Amino acid sequence: MAVATSAKKAKPDEKTIFVYDAKNKDGKLVKGEMAAHNEMVVRAEVRRLGLTVVRVKKKPKPLFSNSKGIVPRDIAVFARQLATMMTAGLPIVQALDIMAQSAEKVSMKELVTTVKNDVESGQTLANAMDKHRKYFDELFVNLVRAGEDSGSLELVLDRVAVYKEKTESLKGKIKKALFYPIAVVVVAFIVTAILLIFVIPQFKQLFDGFGATLPAFTLFVIGLSETFQKYWYFIFGGIGVAIFLFTYVKQRSDRFNHFLDRMILKMPIFGPLTEKAAIARFSRTLATMFSAGVPLVEAMPPTAGSTGNAVFKDAVMNMRDIIAAGSPLKVGMQQSKLFPVMVVQMVAIGEETGALDTMLGKVADMYEEEVDNMVDAMSSLMEPMIMAFLGVVVGGLVIAMYLPIFKLGSVV
Image (cartoon, rainbow, N blue to C red):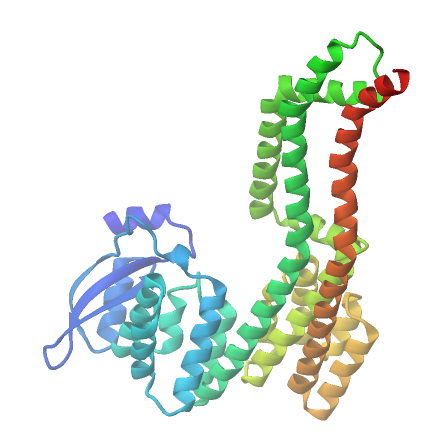
């Protein structure tokens, strides 16, 4: 009855992590974890593994989550280490055990240990990873499953490692391009607010003793300062509410995300950068999955999710329908009108010569290099622009306060 109630409250595709104790044919106790919709599914799956179920219960949630310590770069390192050790001939359980012991983060050690225990109990590596979709995404799991099915897990893991390393490198470049101007704007706003709330009022008291008419620019800044002093809680509260609403809507509205991503693509500087990054991710992901033996139609959904842009994601899913209808990839790319002619031509050559993964890899290399060059160029261009921006904002406030003093000095 409890299981039925829980199933009603849970989302249709939501799984719960269960821990189980079981005995193998030799009577040895085996512990493990499994993601399932309810307890009955876990019991059936454990019996299918040839084990006798002793106990099954929901995994208790930790008081303090260790998951916050795991970042995508940790998963990229995990993929590289596992690929290296398996290529060297180490059994997968031994490789995972070594990685767990050498992990510096406690949260990463627990994750690798959990995966190792599941593999040791008879589950495939893909199924063991599938329980932890927060860290091992659909693409990662599908590639590992394809490698296990084809008997080329070592080769696939090496490709996954390369893919993860390239992806994280690209993400780092995009964050570098966006973080700098945002950080400067935030700092400029905080400095301006401090000057308006705490410094300008001191000058106002001084000017009141002059008994003279103040310049219009100074009056404007003093009025702005008085507004900040009276309504600072509304101003800062409004900014906080706006950020919260933006984040809330962005997480829950596909329509808003599509509109936002379309606007970003039309921006003069960040638009081309976002477009090149999306094409690089598309090419790298599809090349990795296709080279691992994943059929083109099945590779499209994970590829769509990896582009990082809702407009490209929708276009790739439409391309999937076109490919499923029997058309080549180049036709879908042409109809999307998002890919440059050169990219479409390279894909067409790859399809005709049977080297699609190789051509997509070259496209990814080329666009990743272009993104790198654009980020460096933007950084060089933004530094003087940002310095000028700070000079105008802070310098303007300083000039506004010293104008009456200069005026008084000229009279004297």
